[in-house]
Image (cartoon, rainbow over all chains, first blue to last red; front, side, top):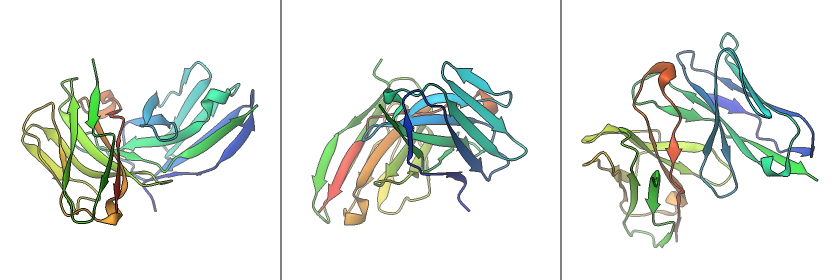
Length: 111
Length: 116
């Protein structure tokens, strides 16, 4: 079983749609959780951290369920510029701040 | 403030050649990492370092070597390049905290390497 699993997609949605991505992780010792965004042929960039209480940043909402080891990302009112690959990222709970990256979910927002 | 700088951006190597991928960060981060990303795949950890003079293997270290003589620099050395090392290489750094206080990584823009 992969440490971090994501549906690779692609998710094809029209502008203005709401889309949700899910991710599961296997390491119960993980303490930090993130969503990264990666544009084609670019480096990954931190989109947002994910907290147990859930957190929101503009059109983006992230949720964490520690009991189910499940993380989600909700994007409301999708824009063309949201088209990218979204990486679910989890730390390993050990020294060195080791992060494990999921394979990513590709989102394509169409006009 | 440049963040994480990688050079070169692109390189074509012949089988058996060697090269060093350079990585420098100016954020005074103790932790640094090298990842590779094959087309359509996730990031795989090659080597990491928790401070100057300390390095350790990640998931896919074979065919690579690293050194960390200063906090700022973390070069990755490829010896005897093979076609299987064709990939995009990302260097990253992070704050050296613990638990939930630890933030994410800052990545360099990557080096696209082709071995022919």
